[in-house]
Length: 144
Image 1 (cartoon, rainbow, N blue to C red):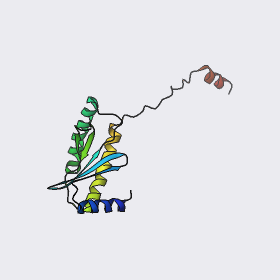
Image 2: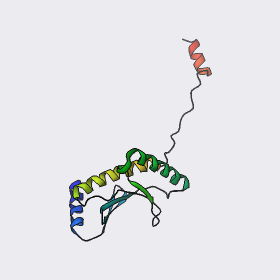
Image 3: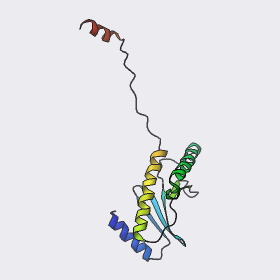
């Protein structure tokens, strides 16, 4: 979906009466919800597995550090009881199409960072260090 298609879709949704707009953006669920204070944007963090206790503890530490650093620009982390996934929520903002596009961009950038921080990295194999005292190395030195 291009940015102009997204803007047109948001415009139609804002002009309609539906309370919630659900989207799938870059492989993750995104929801926009009308509230009395504006429109709240949320995005699921598409982890490959359900979060366990160590992951939740790490997420809480990271959420605290993110809020300390970026304050109100930080999306709020939550654990959904419905699907047991981690979700990020942006504070409700004005129901303006361009502002919603900016909020979605900020939210999705934060979601990508969260995904990279919470996804376990595959360990790359490391070859053993070469022992320079091997017989082959010593023989090569004598023949030089």
